Image (tube, rainbow, N blue to C red; front, top):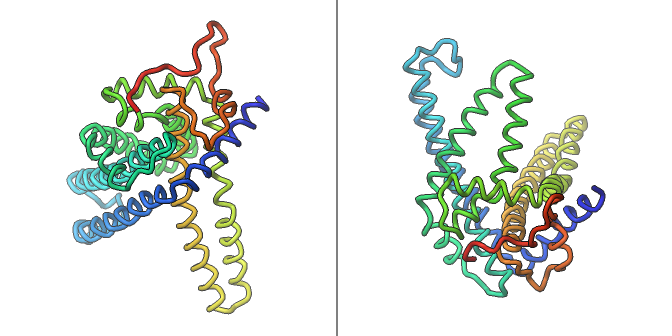
Length: 293
């Protein structure tokens, strides 16, 4: 287990080498964040108009108004998921090209996602449905329901960890992609989980600034407090972009080896090969061979 933790941590650090080789990968999450913010603004105004008479108190809503709110919220979830998935696919596609030694353009990454927009849209539809259901469960005043829904969300995230690259690089539908993602996850479960938890470390500077900003309130100097919270928000946004980029690179890194056995020169081959475990019952090759990346 100690070995898995060590490899997971080193895999996380390896994503920085790929980002360093192609810094433009970070632009995709930036575009995604900007578009998501615009979508939020676009959705806010209709919501204010539709529900201005009763406010946010759902107990005063009728069946029709509540149904309208669900449809409205689902549409918002779908658009946000589609934007996120689309640009995550662009990161994965271009990161894969970097690992091959190529110098991809942003247009290539966007084109890779655009050429599979149908499947990505269906996946966004599924993610929006699950996300909305789990969100509604978490919003109930029930601690058990909140915990269970959070655990289900975490498990679903891990099981579908490789779905986006499979949809982009393989001729598989949604059911086949989920099944294949689960198979790849079973090979890398320890490293995938540890690497995922490692991303929390990136947010440490933002957490520190947040507590410093809270502490600055005691000073009673308004300008200091505003400056502290402003710096916190800037660092938080920058960290979120970095984490999103590195996560896409990690998915590409693990998927690339699982399907082709290829290791980029910038990454230690032993590190990646050891991330894939052999079955206890039957030895299997380090990679499965399929795909066309």
